[in-house]
Image (cartoon, rainbow, N blue to C red; front, top):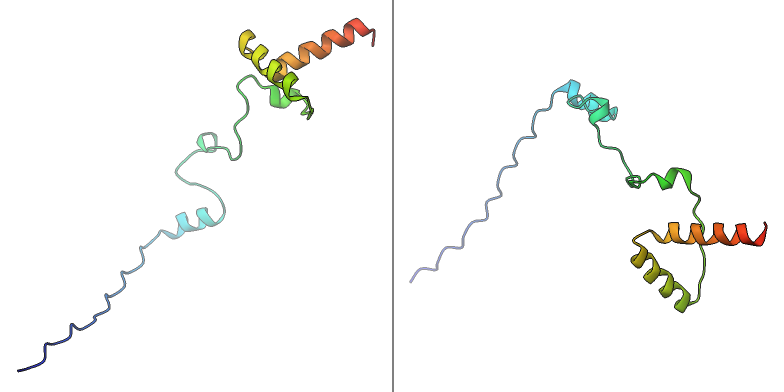
Amino acid sequence: MSKPKKPSLVMPKPKPAPVVEVARADAFVAGEDSKRPEAEKPKRGRPPKANGKAATWEKLTLYLPPDVATALRHRAVDERCDLSDLVANAVAAFLDTSGT
């Protein structure tokens, strides 16, 4: 009886690296995309809000009691507006009536 042959382990040959045009490679390294004009390139980061508040409003963090925060959210849904709009209108009305 002869011993069964062990399967031979043959390593696959590596595939050759793709050839890239030098001009395209240089443009990539420089951060340029030669296929798209500058106006069509997607911008990086978070997209601006549709109504443009991010550019004209200031961010302010408020801490509210849970029941007030819940009532505020419900009112914003009922009036179909942003929390920011609702709070800004309420604060503006308060400042107008308080004389400040």
